Image (cartoon, rainbow, N blue to C red; front, side, top):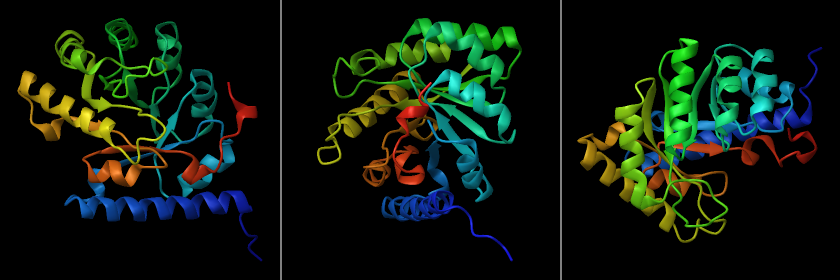
Amino acid sequence: MVMAAPALEGAAVTALRAVLHRVRQAAEKSGRRADDVRVVAVSKTKPIPLIHQVYDAGHRCFGENYVQEIIDKAPQLPEDIEWHFVGHLQSNKVKSLLAAVPSLAMVEGVDNEKLANHLDRTVSTLGRKPLSVLVQVNTSGEESKSGVDPSRCVELVKHVKLGCPNLQFSGLMTIGMPDYSSTPENFRTLSNCRTEVCKALRMAENQCELSMGMSSDFEQAIEMGSTNVRIGSTIFGPRDYSRKK
């Protein structure tokens, strides 16, 4: 007799499938393919067995917010996971993160030249292939949020793209205000930043990703052009604060 999966794990897989269905619908509504949108399953504070269930359901892209937590988790999970670091990254933790997580695919996001320089030098020192990064823009103007001011976005992108040969500039990301799902000014601001960046660096807009949208508003973000959405609680359930590291 085959035993049923634990309720929590079964719920996560069911939720993942529902999210992917909603992503597909939102992409089609905006005239794009679902494959053009990357879903980052943010697994912060979640236990290894639960992440494994989502992995076994076919998902490969996961995000973590805390350096020590991703360092602990990554060696216990399959090597083909595409890890994204989605929290605020301090320069003094860059070396430990990159050395311990060889499958780290992207850092979301770089918000100053100092961090970009640390990442660039560390990638070179470790002999890693170029690391993809997103430049974080503070589209809401809140002091509590990390990110470069929109007026300085082009300047920072130029530094990353032209001055950091071991980094691969992949696009822009933002975290907006809690109520911005009803007034998507943050999404429009990031989209405008992309237009300015691509004009200044003579890039095609499809070469510059937009990462915006989370559990509460990812469909609206996709319809407004997001190519990368970070979804945690909708897949994994409420955050477990007791596991924060």
